Image 1 (cartoon, helix red, strand yellow):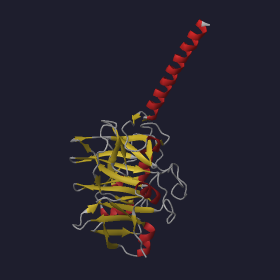
Image 2 (cartoon, rainbow, N blue to C red):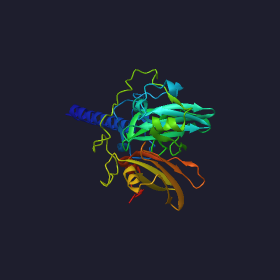
Image 3 (cartoon, rainbow, N blue to C red):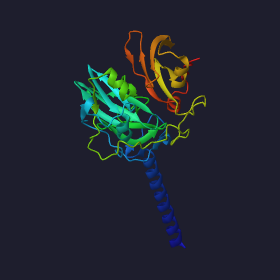
Length: 320
């Protein structure tokens, strides 16, 4: 009997030890996804979702090959591009390529920057990529927050929310990226405004069929692939294109359907007491925003559901 009691006691200690190990491992696993440490994440870990691909499963582009516009035979006039004008240099980054890579790391003169695109949210954002005084490179984590891509910088492996423009975990948590105004427009419009532009070549070094949209039909359906924290009102189709702007903590969305209703190609509005100018190109479905000094404002063009998921308190422009 004594032996049995000892065995029972030993089994109990062993069981507690195993349970402790399992709980410890579960805690570790809960704090890491795709190999990223989420222990200091500023958002709930269960809201950081795996998008399917592993870390770098969607390969970012480094040292992009730029070609003259006349050589871009793979582009049609109506194809969508993200245009960047920086330090007097114009470059275009086709959505057909960004659909497959999501991030292009580039440099114009002394300015390093990253052009980012999230196909799930329709959001294109360009950031200066200098972190703590050093040039940084960004890659795709394979993780999502509010259906939006989480980038990571390769130096510290901190995770960055594209729409927030902020590090949400890692060494640089809480730090902000500075956005660059972009043109989210057609190749036709960009080329007309910037005939000297160069454009990202489809010879990227990766074997991808850039003539095929891997998200074909996604913009038309009301369904989302991944959950979001705040469901947008059904006032608009979830994938209705909007351009969103922030003025000192106040957010406002300009749905394209409302811009069409207004019938105006250029008008002024007030956001948080600040006058801004909106230039609406209904043909090429693109918007430019300017402040009172006629300087460009870096708004975010994307889907209605995505803007609302991050900014449920947003104001909304009504065109009539």
